[in-house]
Image (cartoon, rainbow, N blue to C red; front, side, top):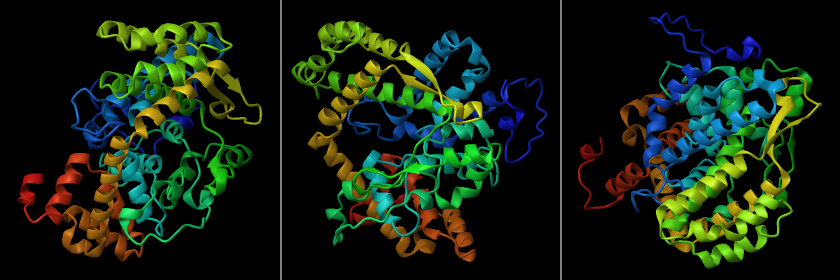
Length: 441
């Protein structure tokens, strides 16, 4: 078992519920699963727009699939590394991380994230992973002031980028934006880290680490092409969750695109099969030379069998590396894919990005969501004590009284919206024909 200090919560709890014998991580999973923020994922865009077709994966179904893959990875690693069983002792912990990993993403996917980052450009920026940490530790009303009050290890595992905005931000020359319509996402990429307001919570999570471990863990490397700095390390639990997330993105989101006819077998042959059939790994070379026939078959069961084969291939090709520079075992060990499988996953992710995400029809949806989010933000910021809902007004007034970052309250409110709610609210504010706001409640 890991040290009891990783089971601690910021707010001490003495709940004596009848015959409750759950582990700390089972409690964490329950809090995430039953949260309003988690339920809202059912109406937030994954890759393809919510409402375009009821077959598409949403953020919610994606998170459930990541959880299933994550526990599969954990089971494999427990068999491969029995000496590290004490670090892989809880499936509920991995489930918690996988279920929660997207909980902070705003409406309209990347378009919504870029929009909020632009609107918050002078107030600490916005980024989905930072918002996830903020929801878990402050916003979700399981407690009055401590969010879901999760264990320290669960919060460590959710930290994909364990440093604050101020430590990672790099000022960059950008052209003036005369109109929201002209905003280019490539020029407003967010800082991938924790918001400065949440730095005290980050400090609490990292408190058990030695000074040397902590300094190395939060250290960052310069970003490519004048981009922001990027942290270099993750915990063991986070590395498992990220591999599960990448696998789900590369394979399950690909399945959506195949079924809806967005990608063709000719595209697959050109971008994927021709590359990976030359892999140095015999399994990859053999499978990718022929699996396209099943993936694009008219019979659904053949496609499902192919998808299952691919997922199994990646889940069973994961290793654990040791970094002796760290003393803390949760940082010393990290999961990674065998090199040929890492290359194969990269090829699949690039295929989804090129043929699906960058498809003009999908980018139009992102662009539309981007405009909606920016215009909502501008409206609320113009007169928050008039337009914000009453409970959000109270938070805004409390922040104003403390001379704090009031725009963060507006970002919190908008980022929690579903795609449909944001679209209808925008229509109500800006369309002369919109109905009553009562209908939105």
